[in-house]
Length: 340
Image (tube, rainbow, N blue to C red):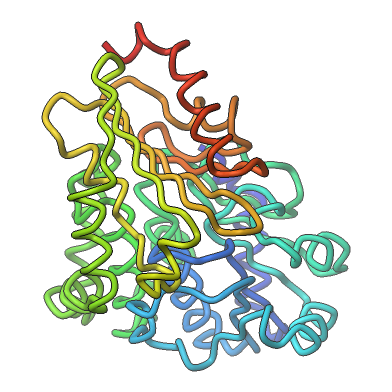
């Protein structure tokens, strides 16, 4: 664990001083529930401490997260670059949540890197790159939202967790643990969840808003994938799913609509490794999921410029989708023994 008590306490002391700081909070591109949940929870917490705080996301994010408290105050960099650059320039602190490398924030990389603001990293991904002044990190946490809760608790401020903060933190922990079923879900995770419910998190409603609010196009795409696009590679206990840019256009797929599709492959009996490959025009994006000891984050890092967690990772390719699929099948051969 890298909670680095001395620097953590130094940061906590600064945030609780009489000074009023300008603070930018940012997270990785195409934010998921944990990224947005941790960012908005920190936004409300820092506002409660009296600071000027704002959340800037590099890109848009799924519509099923638009209900979240604070959504209307988020500034999307791609839609308002000049304003975002001005806020970064004026910032005293930049909180970097749910990413371990500035490359994960796309065009915000250089402005954040060169900013004179002090950088705070709060994250649970493996092997964080050195760019921060304060680090609150462990890959053993279920989610960045869990770490934000722990940070608030270390600050002695659990009494400042409002219902808005509770909703945001609950969302991130719920989504990053697969509704509390992934191996990273600890007894401590459940104790934190219990406290968030006590503090006003609307657990049943949050599940409904995140998982039971689908567009018709997403459901149609889901049916199309299940019927036409699942390719089983039995000798490697692997499932391959891929979507072309033409298929995305045909089904009018928006940001977040393909969320979770990769998990369908892994749900097939006997399958140990599942990949979803999507042609996003500029780049081919890849999602990896695995079971047991197969480290898909190592696979992603070695072959597809990616990384993540042991059993859930992402990657990308600058080749065509056809070339990417061919490369995937070629390198898969190297892992036959591990996938038996």
